[in-house]
Image 1 (cartoon, rainbow, N blue to C red):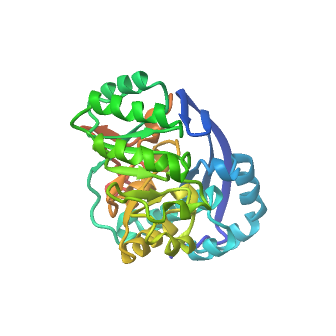
Image 2: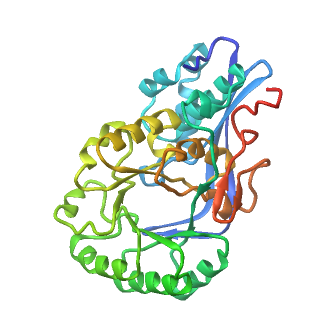
Image 3: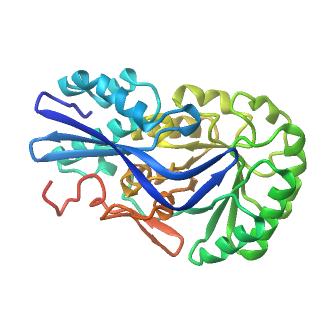
Length: 340
């Protein structure tokens, strides 16, 4: 278990990452991606973490930075990852610190993070490539431009007629691709009942977060011929139990749950309850994708495409090829051939 001792120093600051184009989902448009960056230094050894926070909980970078600064003394006195889970609630601040702790521990031990986490040797993962909500024809054009993508996820808006057209246009453009949709809480039971047959006809393989957080009872008695994933409905480990019977898949995002430590726990608990596991991401750089890539080794669905929406990624970064994402230890963690 990672410990920050008196030799370690905390550095934290915010950055604003420009996007190639506005990114639209149900009820929200992103024009850039603000992130909080944490560095933990122990002599020449460093650990890094990046978090975008959770926009719908007003988990802004200013709040994340203030939260981390408020606990500077406790962090620099010495903290394990498990103690961090008690010190801070789920969210971006804990995520940035937790991921920095993992990398610091990895470099101290000269051991890759995946080995410390008990994960098998990482392999390239099939990832979805997300299409921002837009006019149906424009979304079909984007789907065609993702020539190497084998899995595509569409953002819906809750406008039933437009969403149905979006799904069918994209399916026509990419008849061979795995297709998922993300409603981002945009539906009620009556509209959902009308959407589901259209999704089935379009061979959609996953419906993510159709209803509002707190209104999960809308899913009682719903047709599950298309698996339904919980995203906003699950923030931390303590909320997983309530999902069973209403959701088929749990979407784990490190910014929601507060880091890789809790993400691994959520994945194990979801599987024990008979649900499948998905790893997702907020828009961020490869530094944010790398810890999620470790978790993704144990997931059924992977959505780690955040860097493709940025004007610039970090270097080195994750590699996208033939619909797969690959992350080398040089991006984050410890690379055995390197000197930490």
